[in-house]
Amino acid sequence: MPRSAIPASTPEVQAPPSVSRKPQVQEPVAPPQAAALAPVVLPTEELTSVVASAGLEWVQTTHAAIDSPSAEVAPAASRPRRQRKPKQPVVAEPLQQVETQDGVEDNL
Image (cartoon, rainbow, N blue to C red):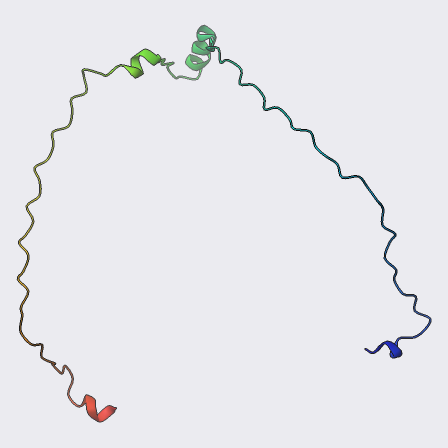
């Protein structure tokens, strides 16, 4: 719509006055220090009674048992290598074109 077609009674929109603000500078925050992790002691008697009341059994493992290699687990016997079929020799003869349908040339 050309400007001359706009009625004169329509007020023009003016840009809001610019407000000068100081840019906010964030001060660097030091990363939180990793707290030394202390071993957690669980109340095993209380937990055992709760688990037993549910009809379950409480089982605990220690890190020493996990870290040490177990003598019970024997290494799996390795399978013999697979014998591959010999490669077929590449035939070095000229190729021949074979037509698989009769009358293909008629349909083109």
